[in-house]
Amino acid sequence: MVDKNELGELLTVNDAAALLGIHPRTLRRHIAEGLVPVVWMPGGTRQRIRKADLAASFKRAEDLPPERRRYNPGRGGHAPGLLREAFTDWIDQRWRDESATPEEMHTVTIDDEERPIEWLIGRLWNCTDILPGTDCDDLDIPPGSTYAVAVRKVREVLATEDVDAAG
Image (cartoon, rainbow, N blue to C red; front, side):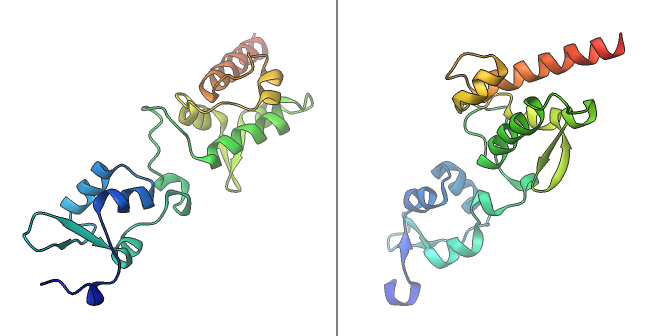
């Protein structure tokens, strides 16, 4: 028989997944891969996860370095706040600043690291989050537009400016 006092707080797979902010299917895959230890309940058909094991096995996405975050830009959905914030900061600092050099226009700062704006555009390409209204106005796109619409507009304008500068 399982002694709950020995095991500490036990969570169902669904509760543990909700706590981590991931889909239960993702957590089950990690369990199958041996990344998260489980406790089998009497009868052998139900799994439980010790809360202490869960904390040791996983970190929240915000705690991971940018290159390890699980956001998949190809699927769309919600981009990490860090990426959305970097884009709106870029609009504030580079787009609105008419004295910004072409080199400044093509770089963005994320976690104190300079990256090409195309890198960020690629990660926000299918982002369904709504861009703040003032940024929509600055980009001359309809209020309530998504980051996906905004980055397409930025790419279009930057490409046009690059052609004009080359020609």
